[in-house]
Figure 1 (cartoon, helix red, strand yellow):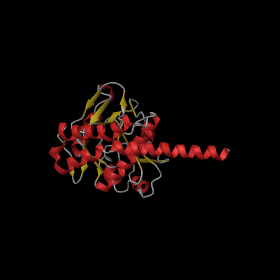
Figure 2: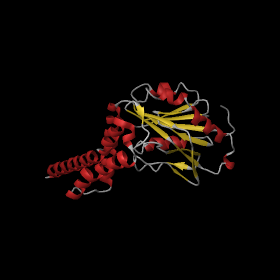
Figure 3: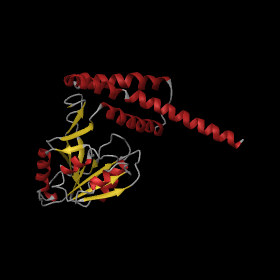
Figure 4: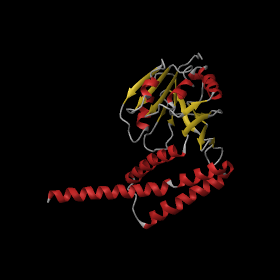
Length: 274
């Protein structure tokens, strides 16, 4: 689809051979360039990405804070507009048409510098419709030079200078095509959350024990399952609310383990100096 302004699509990858082809096929006809920042994948992600004529692959390390690799891709973009994707996301035909309608205007005539995109999340065989998971707005489409990632928090959104609007059509998200993949991803997220607790110098005490083991998970479950009507999605809605609330005690436990490991290392070093 030819447009009067150019679109750069960028994504950060690591072992995404199962997803990347479908992701890039959905946008290849509207992208002037595709920037793939790969964290040294062990599968054929890079080979598959290079099959697309607009693609440029940048090889780097697979950083724990993966937003750093995403921002690296954003910095490389040359198009008038940037669409930042994850490899497990697919731009629907209706969303593509909506994006093209914006690309067919001069950037100076578009008052918004960026757009929130509604995302639909696949979980346990279907797309969640409630529980605060739909519409799962994410800020992914913005004018070049107007958007950036803070690279501080695992769940952070892009920051866009100026006015931000909303698109109407969905971005399909297939991160959790199996429960095993969900648990694998949750393990990675809780490790990042544990490191955030460390950076905040969170205390290990009884009050925080109650906070992270009882108050936060219970609050999250009640909020997503009842207030945001996760029960409408049946069993998947219950499982999502329950397990997503468990990230708090898991992260706090990992944080405790991290501190204990550091103390043991310091004690060993002190002993070696004697």
